[in-house]
Image 1 (cartoon, helix red, strand yellow):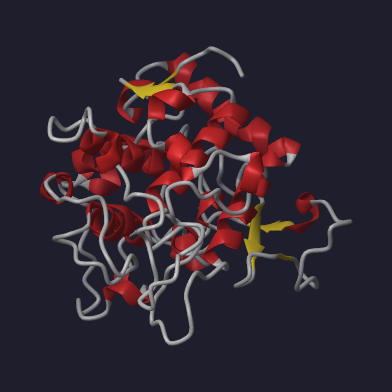
Image 2 (tube, rainbow, N blue to C red; image 1 turned 120 degrees about the vertical axis):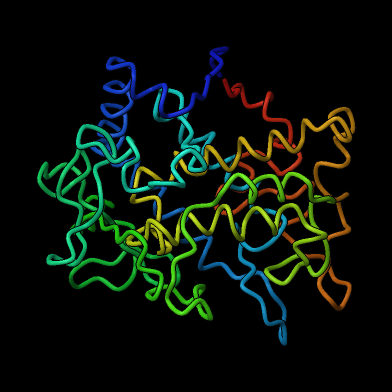
Length: 328
């Protein structure tokens, strides 16, 4: 592995440097053209389709979400992606855009592009990833994470993923009524997460707590508090592909999750746990189902789906310095 340290910068700084901005966009397009980008989309969909539960459990816990593994899995996911991308991933600090999110510079036509067109199924038209450029065909997946095309219902290993890319990137800003997680809000989108949402997460300890899923108490689970509102709130606000199992179709996914990871780093670096890595994640063997059996895939020494031994285990990614990147 290279000794290069990737420095992840605030996206607003990248947007002020034409060379850095251009290199980032070109790297995304290049990875898409090689077919590697679509593999990340399918990996994400496959983990969402891999439920981790026992009979009788009412939980959304899967191999990458709604459980302790959420943050380590996405750290490894971004790490692998960044190595393939060849340039550092910036982070989108959405708290800076709370007052007027639609005016954020991130939506510039020469960067992420903007909202989808409601008259055309919310397809994004402008920008490097918009349908106007014909450079960003999306790949969709069924509930099991298998790519779907016009006629294929399941993945055929003899067909390259590029043969399944026949969609277009979509976004529908603020349309909360289309998202089940907005039930009870009267269709009012809560907007992008605020600084107070991040502060509340950073003030929460321990890392996670039983029952280790989407019902873990937010007052007793940093992971749950971060995954629910700051993380989920952005997916809900952006909408479109960001609300699906193929959310990495939207390059914004990686900038958003870079920021989520940055918040985790800040939590880890708090003076109360900076030199005590045992507090960064529950001890191996302590993450169990209600019946006391081990929740495999979420414990500290477990390898992660879908990479298995071809990737790091959870313990290996807890210290982000081991993965040779840092935040500016």
